[in-house]
Image (cartoon, rainbow, N blue to C red; front, side, top):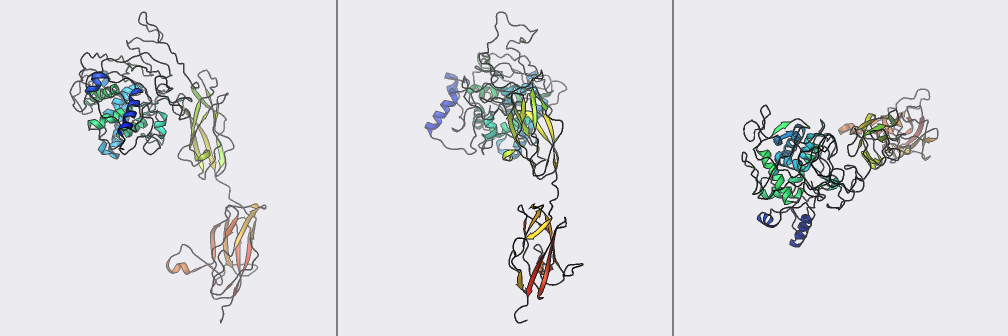
Length: 605
């Protein structure tokens, strides 16, 4: 699992005392690692002193089979290791999961080529963290079919991390749990990155960062492993990266074992057909927070296997036993360590009692369905609030309401509508009737239809979409124009009128008329048919260049009143003609205002 807080990109120096204290805290709170002679035999460089623990969560401890993995007959060959032949099932990686690892490594290889991240390292971590997303139990987009949740981090055998995400990712409103195929803690995903925005990444380009999606999780894990300018071909940097993910010597050895195994060759298997590991280290809790029995796979002693030597078989240490686990089921349930099936119809070993579950699940029940409330799509005029708030009902398999379940409403990039605080996504909890009601949604300026995606934060129910439409604002109207001052407007021929000499106010039915288009024209004084004057006061084109910017302009369009219904006309110039001239202001709705402009003769003319 990834660490809880952010890692600094720069390698900072720390005092020996601080480093020792942090390392002691890390070691004490993790699953048991190598001790005694084994620990003294090999002590890789620890992560930087500011790298925090991962919550003390456990992991699968199964080791690879002893035979070198090669693809079975007819399987595509990845170009590494021996030629195609027959090999162990553990070398098969689910198609979508494998694609996610390779895509993440390729993306990081382009952005950070100095890291030299191999996709097989991601596969090794994915194996021990989630059994390759529970054998590839993911949909076509790479999102897990059921949530993969770590134990509740409540301080009982693990670190204590109270809820940081309002249950958005883990569905737990009291404590955090590691989530997804690569088991990120919510705070790590959302805010633990080098810039404070989290390690979360969008690996499949859908505009979202979802730790339950294997493409997103793999890219985020790769970014975490490469932090601090690491070169993963250097053993110290490789060890630091893995230990930063989970600070345990046993974890390090297990990941390196799978890393070396996958480098010797893999083959692709259909999603849902991957082999699930069955052995977990001591203190592991199941996905519902219950304590599982100690399923530690014994015999992890000996030196860490070193990747980079294809074809070399993995050899167990002295006294090491290895029992490849029975393949798990695609739905994520595991067989027992001895291969028996705990489901109805299976047989339990004689005299063995089921492992008690002293800690029942906590938090709200998980709904299995979300049902939209209301038959019509939501609608609003641009710039106004939607009259009806987005709302769904959460229910269980029997159709009963589920209260207290976190539900997330997400707006698409195609709209500029927003929830309060300019948010594009919000999470709310269902009420006693199972209703989840989003806060007031306000339409932006962009018109058209869009869909609001609604999901349970733990992905326990299929997503639903609510239709919404933003309609164009009606054209502003004005039935009256008036000057804001009765001061006489005068200027001398060849000079200009005072800045902002003409200011008007537009109203409609005695109310402010904002956004009204106004046309200003210098006209003749013909009472029957006033036309544009060819002499007297004029405007200048503010966008003209060269000689054209001095050319008189006697009709201006595109003028608009502000939010208060006010409009200040641009500066008005005069030519050599004295006299009284007329400025006519009009709107599309027929409002008219005529303003007199007096021009005195120039002195000495």
